[in-house]
Length: 107
Image (cartoon, rainbow, N blue to C red; front, top):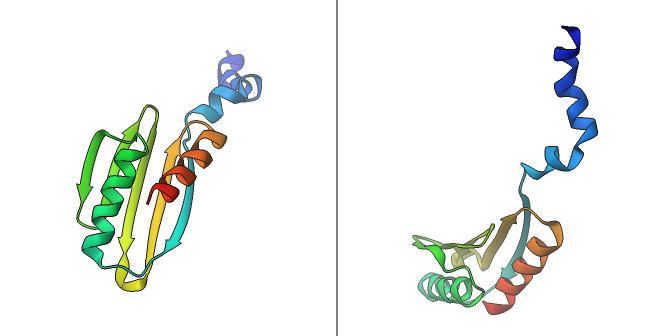
């Protein structure tokens, strides 16, 4: 019966991809802006949709949120501070990185 105690620990080493798959990869970027908060929010909504994050899309009080397949984006406007934050979360490192760059360029 001791092997039942060790089996979960061994599975982590035997199947590292499965252990890692449960954690999303999150990439973020910052862009400096000199626009109003309202204009920033409108641009956040357009950038999210134009970048394909139109499923479960939600305009937020300070930005936008959307989903594209297994990836989600959050854009937060802090125009009074002159900055916009972009974050993309998903299962693949390179795809998350590429998507956050796409959203930032679309903004």
